[in-house]
Image (cartoon, rainbow, N blue to C red; front, top):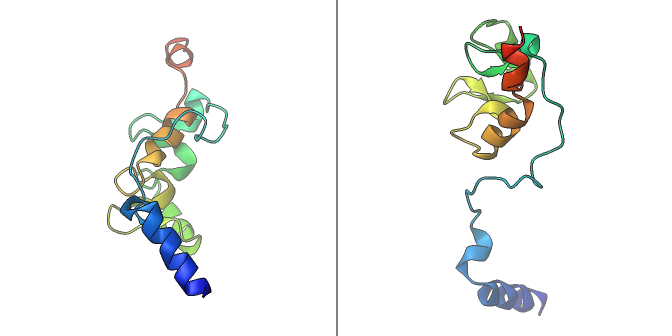
Length: 104
């Protein structure tokens, strides 16, 4: 009986109920995080310095051990904008303000 109710609920919800939408996160969905200081940001690779595997390849095994590695794109999974469109919003929230960059 419970299986029939669950199946009925899915059928009533429609096909979109099972498919995740790839839409940009709204401001409310982006976790509150403070912007990094310019010296904490790798401007060359546009990621936080402590996550930049291009500048420091020794970080890769650490990220792999933490299961935060996208082998397809060779970047931390939490930073991979190709696999997770919301990663762009998280990076934008951390990126230093332009004013702080130009003040130096």
